[in-house]
Amino acid sequence: MEFIDDDFASLTSGMSPAVSSFHYRFLDEEKKPFLLVLPGGGYCHISGEKEGRVIAEWAESLGFHAGILSYQVQPVEKEKLLQELEKIKKFLQAEEKIDQIFVMGFSAGAHLAGLFSCLGEPVVAGMILAYPVVTFEQDCRHQGSAENFLGPDYTPANCHTYSLENLVTATTPPAFIWHTAEDGSVPVKNSLLLAASLAQQQIPFDLHIFPEGHHGLGMLQGTAHTRQWIKLLEHWLQEQRK
Image (cartoon, rainbow, N blue to C red; front, side):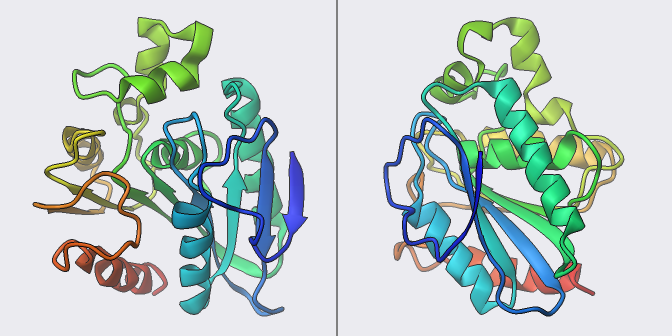
């Protein structure tokens, strides 16, 4: 995995990287929160522009340092990918210009954001999950993401192990989750399952279910009511910074 200090210009839509690369940028030398962005794509490609570069630049407009993981998907080597997440975590922890770490993921990238938050040392101040893939074992699973992530290890035991609703503990960070009720790709029940697990562990969370909007909206113009998620998230981030 490469660590690349750049302007995110190389991140485009529909990427299918065979090797992971972590792109990051510091606004200045001052201590600031850092937002790690994990684009979606069903673990078969990376939506590097809409759910990567656009999101990182928005985070910078809020005063965050930001970075994007373009993770390998041809095919996914899950153990290697999890090791790469730990390397990024250590890199961010050691950086003096960072005072808090947040992670934001979309769809399958939200599943990866959940793994980043729930596995290993608890260092994440908050996780933001947009129309997340949560479960690999319930009837609402996104079959493609489950099969692409687990590959030849697609077994009931591994489906249980890598389902986010089973990984929530007392050290899981606060969460901001949003989904649309009419999502035809990743059923909204994924977010409800995760919210139930968070509630059971008494982890604070904001859950927003909007009635309209297709899967993969990101920050695209669409239903004005659904686009409220952006302002709601900005307010939530301000609260986490207090």
